[in-house]
Length: 364
Image (cartoon, rainbow, N blue to C red; front, side, top):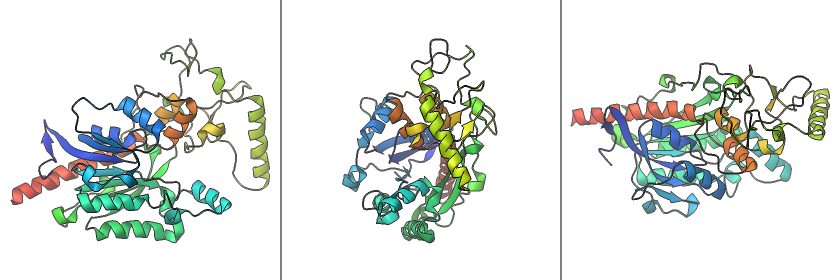
Protein backbone atom coordinates (compact mmCIF):
# COMPACT_ATOMS: atom_id res chain seq x y z
CA UNK A 1 0.00 0.00 0.00
CA UNK A 2 2.94 2.31 0.53
CA UNK A 3 3.04 3.68 -3.03
CA UNK A 4 -0.68 3.50 -3.78
CA UNK A 5 -1.31 7.21 -3.30
CA UNK A 6 0.23 8.77 -6.39
CA UNK A 7 -0.40 10.78 -9.49
CA UNK A 8 -1.83 8.63 -12.24
CA UNK A 9 -2.11 10.37 -15.63
CA UNK A 10 -1.92 13.67 -13.80
CA UNK A 11 -4.63 12.86 -11.27
CA UNK A 12 -4.61 11.44 -7.71
CA UNK A 13 -5.07 7.71 -7.35
CA UNK A 14 -5.81 5.90 -4.10
CA UNK A 15 -7.73 2.90 -2.77
CA UNK A 16 -10.63 3.40 -0.38
CA UNK A 17 -13.27 1.37 1.46
CA UNK A 18 -16.93 2.38 1.74
CA UNK A 19 -18.53 1.48 5.10
CA UNK A 20 -22.26 1.87 5.89
CA UNK A 21 -22.37 2.61 2.19
CA UNK A 22 -26.10 3.14 1.68
CA UNK A 23 -26.72 3.77 -2.00
CA UNK A 24 -23.18 4.88 -2.81
CA UNK A 25 -23.08 8.65 -2.38
CA UNK A 26 -19.65 8.55 -0.76
CA UNK A 27 -18.35 6.12 -3.34
CA UNK A 28 -19.42 8.38 -6.17
CA UNK A 29 -17.72 11.35 -4.50
CA UNK A 30 -14.44 9.55 -3.82
CA UNK A 31 -14.31 8.02 -7.30
CA UNK A 32 -14.63 11.53 -8.71
CA UNK A 33 -11.65 12.46 -6.53
CA UNK A 34 -9.52 9.72 -8.09
CA UNK A 35 -10.22 6.81 -5.75
CA UNK A 36 -10.81 3.14 -6.44
CA UNK A 37 -13.31 1.41 -4.15
CA UNK A 38 -11.98 -1.99 -3.03
CA UNK A 39 -14.45 -2.87 -0.26
CA UNK A 40 -18.09 -2.03 0.51
CA UNK A 41 -20.20 -2.82 3.55
CA UNK A 42 -23.98 -2.30 3.61
CA UNK A 43 -26.44 -4.45 5.56
CA UNK A 44 -29.75 -3.28 4.01
CA UNK A 45 -30.75 -5.44 1.05
CA UNK A 46 -32.74 -2.71 -0.68
CA UNK A 47 -29.90 -0.18 -0.40
CA UNK A 48 -27.53 -2.85 -1.65
CA UNK A 49 -29.78 -3.36 -4.70
CA UNK A 50 -29.58 0.34 -5.56
CA UNK A 51 -25.83 0.40 -4.88
CA UNK A 52 -24.99 -2.62 -7.01
CA UNK A 53 -27.26 -1.43 -9.84
CA UNK A 54 -25.26 1.78 -10.07
CA UNK A 55 -21.85 0.33 -9.19
CA UNK A 56 -21.71 -3.13 -10.76
CA UNK A 57 -18.49 -5.02 -10.09
CA UNK A 58 -16.52 -5.74 -13.23
CA UNK A 59 -15.62 -9.36 -13.89
CA UNK A 60 -12.28 -10.04 -12.27
CA UNK A 61 -12.58 -6.97 -10.05
CA UNK A 62 -10.85 -7.00 -6.67
CA UNK A 63 -13.86 -5.25 -5.10
CA UNK A 64 -15.40 -7.03 -2.09
CA UNK A 65 -19.00 -6.53 -0.91
CA UNK A 66 -20.06 -7.51 2.61
CA UNK A 67 -23.18 -7.00 4.69
CA UNK A 68 -23.13 -6.51 8.45
CA UNK A 69 -19.76 -4.97 9.32
CA UNK A 70 -19.88 -6.40 12.84
CA UNK A 71 -19.44 -9.89 11.38
CA UNK A 72 -16.50 -8.98 9.15
CA UNK A 73 -13.00 -9.92 10.33
CA UNK A 74 -10.38 -7.28 9.62
CA UNK A 75 -8.40 -9.79 7.57
CA UNK A 76 -11.29 -9.86 5.06
CA UNK A 77 -10.84 -6.15 4.35
CA UNK A 78 -8.33 -5.27 1.60
CA UNK A 79 -5.47 -2.86 2.18
CA UNK A 80 -6.60 0.68 1.50
CA UNK A 81 -5.47 4.29 1.75
CA UNK A 82 -8.71 5.95 2.88
CA UNK A 83 -11.52 4.67 5.09
CA UNK A 84 -14.89 6.30 4.38
CA UNK A 85 -17.91 5.74 6.61
CA UNK A 86 -21.16 7.43 7.55
CA UNK A 87 -21.87 5.28 10.59
CA UNK A 88 -25.59 5.16 11.54
CA UNK A 89 -26.85 8.47 12.80
CA UNK A 90 -30.17 7.50 14.41
CA UNK A 91 -28.70 7.02 17.89
CA UNK A 92 -27.44 10.62 17.81
CA UNK A 93 -29.98 12.52 15.68
CA UNK A 94 -32.48 14.89 17.28
CA UNK A 95 -35.41 12.90 15.91
CA UNK A 96 -33.83 9.58 16.85
CA UNK A 97 -33.11 10.65 20.42
CA UNK A 98 -36.60 12.13 20.87
CA UNK A 99 -38.26 8.99 19.57
CA UNK A 100 -36.18 6.68 21.73
CA UNK A 101 -36.75 8.84 24.80
CA UNK A 102 -40.48 8.64 24.19
CA UNK A 103 -40.27 4.86 23.91
CA UNK A 104 -37.96 4.54 26.90
CA UNK A 105 -35.16 3.14 24.76
CA UNK A 106 -31.42 3.89 25.01
CA UNK A 107 -29.72 6.14 22.48
CA UNK A 108 -26.19 7.16 21.54
CA UNK A 109 -23.52 4.69 22.62
CA UNK A 110 -26.09 3.10 24.95
CA UNK A 111 -27.97 1.89 21.88
CA UNK A 112 -27.08 -1.84 21.85
CA UNK A 113 -27.06 -2.09 18.05
CA UNK A 114 -26.44 1.08 16.08
CA UNK A 115 -24.73 3.13 18.75
CA UNK A 116 -21.69 0.90 19.01
CA UNK A 117 -20.98 0.69 15.30
CA UNK A 118 -18.47 3.52 15.59
CA UNK A 119 -16.24 1.11 17.49
CA UNK A 120 -16.27 -1.23 14.49
CA UNK A 121 -14.93 1.69 12.46
CA UNK A 122 -12.25 2.26 15.10
CA UNK A 123 -11.45 -1.47 15.08
CA UNK A 124 -10.81 -1.38 11.35
CA UNK A 125 -8.74 1.80 11.54
CA UNK A 126 -6.60 0.34 14.32
CA UNK A 127 -5.83 -2.88 12.45
CA UNK A 128 -5.66 -1.69 8.83
CA UNK A 129 -3.99 1.71 9.45
CA UNK A 130 -5.44 3.62 6.48
CA UNK A 131 -3.53 6.76 5.67
CA UNK A 132 -6.65 8.86 6.13
CA UNK A 133 -10.33 8.60 7.06
CA UNK A 134 -13.54 10.53 6.50
CA UNK A 135 -16.46 9.93 8.85
CA UNK A 136 -19.90 11.54 8.55
CA UNK A 137 -22.82 11.93 10.94
CA UNK A 138 -25.64 14.25 11.96
CA UNK A 139 -24.70 17.61 13.45
CA UNK A 140 -26.37 16.62 16.75
CA UNK A 141 -23.45 14.26 17.32
CA UNK A 142 -21.49 17.27 18.62
CA UNK A 143 -23.97 18.07 21.38
CA UNK A 144 -25.27 14.56 22.14
CA UNK A 145 -24.93 13.62 25.82
CA UNK A 146 -23.55 17.09 26.62
CA UNK A 147 -20.69 16.60 24.18
CA UNK A 148 -19.47 13.33 25.71
CA UNK A 149 -20.26 11.22 22.64
CA UNK A 150 -18.23 13.44 20.32
CA UNK A 151 -15.39 13.61 22.85
CA UNK A 152 -15.25 9.80 23.05
CA UNK A 153 -15.05 9.55 19.25
CA UNK A 154 -12.35 12.21 19.02
CA UNK A 155 -10.32 10.76 21.89
CA UNK A 156 -10.52 7.25 20.46
CA UNK A 157 -9.30 8.29 17.02
CA UNK A 158 -6.51 10.46 18.44
CA UNK A 159 -5.45 7.59 20.70
CA UNK A 160 -4.83 5.59 17.52
CA UNK A 161 -2.31 8.28 16.46
CA UNK A 162 -4.49 10.04 13.91
CA UNK A 163 -4.96 13.75 13.47
CA UNK A 164 -8.54 14.90 13.93
CA UNK A 165 -10.40 17.76 12.31
CA UNK A 166 -14.18 18.20 12.22
CA UNK A 167 -16.58 20.63 10.66
CA UNK A 168 -20.36 20.95 10.38
CA UNK A 169 -21.10 21.67 6.72
CA UNK A 170 -24.39 23.04 5.42
CA UNK A 171 -25.24 21.44 2.07
CA UNK A 172 -27.09 24.56 0.92
CA UNK A 173 -23.78 25.74 -0.59
CA UNK A 174 -24.24 23.11 -3.34
CA UNK A 175 -27.89 21.99 -3.32
CA UNK A 176 -31.14 23.80 -2.43
CA UNK A 177 -31.49 22.07 0.93
CA UNK A 178 -30.64 23.19 4.44
CA UNK A 179 -28.86 20.03 5.52
CA UNK A 180 -26.12 20.26 8.13
CA UNK A 181 -23.88 17.27 8.76
CA UNK A 182 -20.62 16.83 10.64
CA UNK A 183 -17.58 15.52 8.79
CA UNK A 184 -14.51 14.20 10.59
CA UNK A 185 -11.15 13.85 8.84
CA UNK A 186 -7.93 12.32 10.11
CA UNK A 187 -4.50 11.33 8.81
CA UNK A 188 -2.07 8.71 10.14
CA UNK A 189 0.47 10.56 12.29
CA UNK A 190 2.69 7.47 12.43
CA UNK A 191 3.27 7.98 8.71
CA UNK A 192 3.02 11.73 8.32
CA UNK A 193 3.89 13.05 11.77
CA UNK A 194 2.94 16.69 12.21
CA UNK A 195 3.12 17.43 8.48
CA UNK A 196 -0.64 17.03 8.05
CA UNK A 197 -2.14 20.30 6.84
CA UNK A 198 -5.73 19.34 6.04
CA UNK A 199 -7.98 22.36 6.56
CA UNK A 200 -11.73 22.48 5.98
CA UNK A 201 -11.29 26.13 5.01
CA UNK A 202 -9.38 24.92 1.95
CA UNK A 203 -12.20 22.64 0.75
CA UNK A 204 -13.85 23.85 -2.45
CA UNK A 205 -17.54 23.04 -2.72
CA UNK A 206 -18.83 23.26 -6.28
CA UNK A 207 -22.56 23.46 -6.95
CA UNK A 208 -23.56 21.18 -9.87
CA UNK A 209 -25.63 23.92 -11.53
CA UNK A 210 -25.01 27.32 -9.96
CA UNK A 211 -23.91 28.94 -6.71
CA UNK A 212 -26.64 29.40 -4.11
CA UNK A 213 -28.94 26.93 -5.87
CA UNK A 214 -32.73 27.05 -5.55
CA UNK A 215 -35.41 24.41 -6.02
CA UNK A 216 -35.63 25.41 -9.68
CA UNK A 217 -32.50 23.29 -10.21
CA UNK A 218 -34.20 20.21 -8.74
CA UNK A 219 -37.85 20.29 -9.81
CA UNK A 220 -39.13 18.94 -13.11
CA UNK A 221 -39.64 21.79 -15.55
CA UNK A 222 -43.00 20.39 -16.73
CA UNK A 223 -42.98 22.59 -19.85
CA UNK A 224 -42.11 19.89 -22.37
CA UNK A 225 -38.39 20.74 -22.42
CA UNK A 226 -37.38 17.92 -20.09
CA UNK A 227 -37.28 14.24 -20.93
CA UNK A 228 -40.31 12.18 -19.93
CA UNK A 229 -39.48 9.85 -17.04
CA UNK A 230 -42.21 7.35 -16.26
CA UNK A 231 -43.52 6.70 -13.63
CA UNK A 232 -42.42 10.02 -12.10
CA UNK A 233 -43.92 12.05 -14.94
CA UNK A 234 -46.76 11.47 -17.34
CA UNK A 235 -46.25 11.13 -21.10
CA UNK A 236 -46.18 14.92 -21.43
CA UNK A 237 -43.40 15.43 -18.88
CA UNK A 238 -45.67 16.73 -16.14
CA UNK A 239 -45.22 15.32 -12.64
CA UNK A 240 -47.52 12.33 -12.17
CA UNK A 241 -50.75 13.12 -10.35
CA UNK A 242 -50.06 10.49 -7.68
CA UNK A 243 -47.55 12.85 -6.05
CA UNK A 244 -50.22 15.48 -5.34
CA UNK A 245 -51.49 15.19 -1.76
CA UNK A 246 -54.95 13.77 -1.26
CA UNK A 247 -57.58 16.20 0.11
CA UNK A 248 -57.65 14.31 3.38
CA UNK A 249 -53.87 14.39 3.94
CA UNK A 250 -53.63 18.07 2.97
CA UNK A 251 -56.41 18.96 5.42
CA UNK A 252 -54.70 16.95 8.17
CA UNK A 253 -51.35 18.68 7.64
CA UNK A 254 -52.93 22.14 7.66
CA UNK A 255 -54.80 21.41 10.89
CA UNK A 256 -51.66 19.93 12.44
CA UNK A 257 -49.71 23.08 11.65
CA UNK A 258 -52.47 25.33 13.04
CA UNK A 259 -52.52 23.36 16.28
CA UNK A 260 -48.79 23.63 16.81
CA UNK A 261 -48.65 27.30 15.77
CA UNK A 262 -51.27 28.00 18.41
CA UNK A 263 -49.07 26.19 20.94
CA UNK A 264 -46.15 28.44 19.99
CA UNK A 265 -43.90 25.95 18.23
CA UNK A 266 -42.89 25.54 14.63
CA UNK A 267 -44.05 22.04 13.86
CA UNK A 268 -45.82 21.65 10.55
CA UNK A 269 -45.28 21.24 6.85
CA UNK A 270 -42.69 23.05 4.75
CA UNK A 271 -44.01 24.53 1.50
CA UNK A 272 -41.51 25.46 -1.22
CA UNK A 273 -41.59 27.21 -4.57
CA UNK A 274 -39.00 27.11 -7.33
CA UNK A 275 -37.23 30.08 -5.74
CA UNK A 276 -36.79 28.51 -2.30
CA UNK A 277 -34.32 26.36 -0.38
CA UNK A 278 -35.92 23.29 1.18
CA UNK A 279 -35.74 21.87 4.66
CA UNK A 280 -33.72 18.73 5.32
CA UNK A 281 -34.89 15.67 3.40
CA UNK A 282 -35.33 12.89 5.97
CA UNK A 283 -35.74 9.14 5.76
CA UNK A 284 -39.35 9.58 6.94
CA UNK A 285 -40.27 11.56 3.84
CA UNK A 286 -42.25 8.58 2.54
CA UNK A 287 -44.81 8.98 5.34
CA UNK A 288 -46.41 12.26 4.25
CA UNK A 289 -43.70 14.37 2.60
CA UNK A 290 -44.53 17.16 5.00
CA UNK A 291 -41.05 18.65 5.39
CA UNK A 292 -40.79 19.46 1.65
CA UNK A 293 -44.06 20.06 -0.20
CA UNK A 294 -44.04 21.73 -3.61
CA UNK A 295 -46.48 24.61 -4.06
CA UNK A 296 -48.39 24.00 -7.30
CA UNK A 297 -50.27 27.31 -7.21
CA UNK A 298 -53.74 28.16 -8.52
CA UNK A 299 -55.46 26.74 -5.48
CA UNK A 300 -54.13 23.25 -6.26
CA UNK A 301 -53.00 21.01 -3.45
CA UNK A 302 -49.21 20.74 -3.02
CA UNK A 303 -47.27 17.65 -3.99
CA UNK A 304 -44.43 15.53 -2.76
CA UNK A 305 -41.09 15.49 -4.49
CA UNK A 306 -40.64 12.56 -6.83
CA UNK A 307 -37.78 10.16 -6.08
CA UNK A 308 -35.84 11.66 -9.01
CA UNK A 309 -36.20 15.12 -7.53
CA UNK A 310 -35.01 13.73 -4.19
CA UNK A 311 -31.97 12.30 -5.98
CA UNK A 312 -31.22 15.72 -7.48
CA UNK A 313 -31.71 17.35 -4.08
CA UNK A 314 -28.95 15.07 -2.75
CA UNK A 315 -26.64 15.90 -5.67
CA UNK A 316 -26.99 12.63 -7.59
CA UNK A 317 -26.82 12.88 -11.39
CA UNK A 318 -29.85 12.22 -13.58
CA UNK A 319 -28.36 8.96 -14.83
CA UNK A 320 -28.41 7.49 -11.31
CA UNK A 321 -30.72 4.47 -11.52
CA UNK A 322 -33.54 4.13 -8.96
CA UNK A 323 -34.49 0.43 -9.06
CA UNK A 324 -36.69 0.37 -5.93
CA UNK A 325 -40.18 1.51 -4.96
CA UNK A 326 -40.94 5.13 -4.10
CA UNK A 327 -41.12 4.28 -0.39
CA UNK A 328 -37.69 2.65 -0.45
CA UNK A 329 -36.24 5.42 -2.60
CA UNK A 330 -37.43 8.14 -0.20
CA UNK A 331 -35.78 6.31 2.71
CA UNK A 332 -32.56 5.79 0.77
CA UNK A 333 -32.13 9.37 -0.38
CA UNK A 334 -33.15 10.70 3.05
CA UNK A 335 -30.39 8.60 4.60
CA UNK A 336 -27.77 9.47 1.97
CA UNK A 337 -25.02 12.05 1.87
CA UNK A 338 -25.06 15.07 -0.42
CA UNK A 339 -22.63 13.94 -3.10
CA UNK A 340 -20.98 17.30 -4.02
CA UNK A 341 -20.32 18.05 -0.34
CA UNK A 342 -18.42 14.79 0.10
CA UNK A 343 -16.73 15.27 -3.26
CA UNK A 344 -15.24 18.59 -2.16
CA UNK A 345 -13.83 17.03 1.01
CA UNK A 346 -12.63 13.94 -0.88
CA UNK A 347 -10.68 16.04 -3.37
CA UNK A 348 -8.98 17.95 -0.56
CA UNK A 349 -8.05 14.67 1.19
CA UNK A 350 -6.68 13.29 -2.09
CA UNK A 351 -4.63 16.43 -2.76
CA UNK A 352 -3.19 16.35 0.77
CA UNK A 353 -2.29 12.66 0.45
CA UNK A 354 -0.46 13.27 -2.81
CA UNK A 355 1.46 16.16 -1.26
CA UNK A 356 2.31 14.18 1.88
CA UNK A 357 3.50 11.17 -0.12
CA UNK A 358 5.61 13.44 -2.31
CA UNK A 359 7.18 14.92 0.80
CA UNK A 360 8.08 11.47 2.11
CA UNK A 361 9.66 10.51 -1.22
CA UNK A 362 11.70 13.70 -1.35
CA UNK A 363 12.88 13.19 2.23
CA UNK A 364 13.85 9.62 1.40
